[in-house]
Amino acid sequence: MKKGTLGPKLKLSLPPPDEVSISKFLSESGTFKDGDLLVNGKGVRVVSQTEVETQSLIQPTDNQLSLADFDAIKVIGKGNGGIVRLVQHKWTGQFFALKVIQMNIDDSARKQIAQELKINQSAQCPYVVVCYQSFYDNGAISIILEYMDGGSLADFLKQVKTIPEPYLAAICKQVLKGLWYLHHEKHIIHRDLKPSNLLINHRGEVKITDFGVSAIMENTSGLANTFVGTYNYMSPERISGTRYGYRSDLWSLGLVLLECATGHFPYSPPQQEGWINVYELMETIVDEPSPSAPSEQFSPEFRSFISACVQKDPKERLSANELMTHPFISMFDDLDIDLASYFTDAGSPLATL
Ligand code: ATP
Ligand code: MG
Image (cartoon, rainbow, N blue to C red; front, side, top):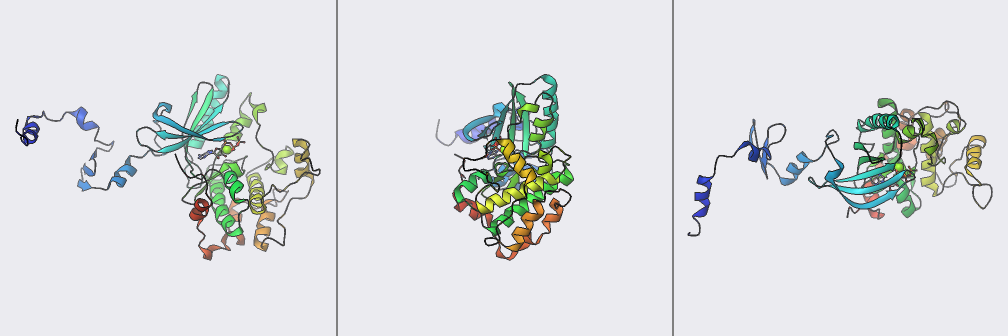
C-alpha cells in the first residue's frame, strides 16, 4: 500500500462510533471532551490543557473514592493514633494525605465513628483541611485528606525556631477564621488544637485539621482509654472536668501562638528533669497563673492578644469572632506579609516526591 493512502481510507471505513467509545469522552453534564476540545449544548470551545485538568480534578463533594484508586508514595508523619502517608490518585494524578488510625472496635462503635466522620467530610471552608472520604477497613479507619505540602506548624517551627510577630498575625488570622467556621457554622469544638494540627502549604495557607477526631475518641463507647494525645494545650476548665465550650479552643490557640513566638512551650517544669508526670503539668495549668509574653520582646498588642486567649476563666476569654477584631490581627496589614515565600524559603518539606 502506498504511503499516505491509509489515513483517509481508514477513516471512511470506520464504523460509526458507538456509545461505549464515546462515553469515555463525555462528562456527567454531557460535555464531550477530548484534549483541548470541549463540545456541549452551548457549542464548541478550545480550552487549555490546565483548564481541562482542573475540571476533572476530584472535588470534596465526590464521594466515589476507593482506597484501591491510590498509590502510596511515602510516609509523611506519625502521630499517636496512626500514620499519615502521601498518596497519589491513580487516574487524576492528584496528591492526598491518607491518615490511617488503627482501632479494633465493635460494630456499633464503628457505626458511630463513621457517622461522626461524615460531619468532618461536610466541612468546607478554606481554613480547614478538606476531608474527602473515610473508610473503615480491616480494623482501621482510613481518612483521605487534602494534602498540605508544607507539613504542620510543629514541623515548621522545628526549622525556624521562632516565628516573628508579623507572620504570626497572618497565621493567626487564618486560624481564627477556621475556628470561627468550626464554632459558628459547624458547632464543633476542636478539642485538640496544637501546632501539629495546623497545616501549611506553599500558597501560604494555614488550615486546621483533626477537628472532631478527638471528640470521636472521647465519646465513642469503649474508647475512653484510648486518648493518648497531649494535655499540653488543654484548657484549665477541661482539665478540671467542668463544663467546657468553644472557648477552650481559644485557650489552646493562645498557647500555640506563645510557643511559636518564644520557641518553647509556655509552661516549664519546676525541676530540671522535666515534668514528673502528666498530672504535675495539669495541676500547674489549673492552679498557676496563665503564662504571658515577656514585655521586653513583644509588642503590647501581641501581649494583650495572648492575655485575651489565656484567661483562665472561660467567661473572660474572648471568642474567635471577638479576637478577629483585636488590634494585633490587623497591626501589620500594611506590610503585605507574604506567607507563601516565608513558608517556602524556610525550606519546609514542600516536595511531593
Ligand atoms: P496526634 O496523634 O497526637 O494528633 P499529630 O497531630 O502529630 O499527633 P497526626 O495527626 O497523625 O499526628 O499527623 C502526623 C503528622 O503528619 C503531622 O504532624 C503532619 O506533619 C503530617 N500530616 C498530617 N496530616 C497531613 C496532611 N493533610 N497533609 C500533610 N501532612 C500531614
Ligand atoms: Mg494531627
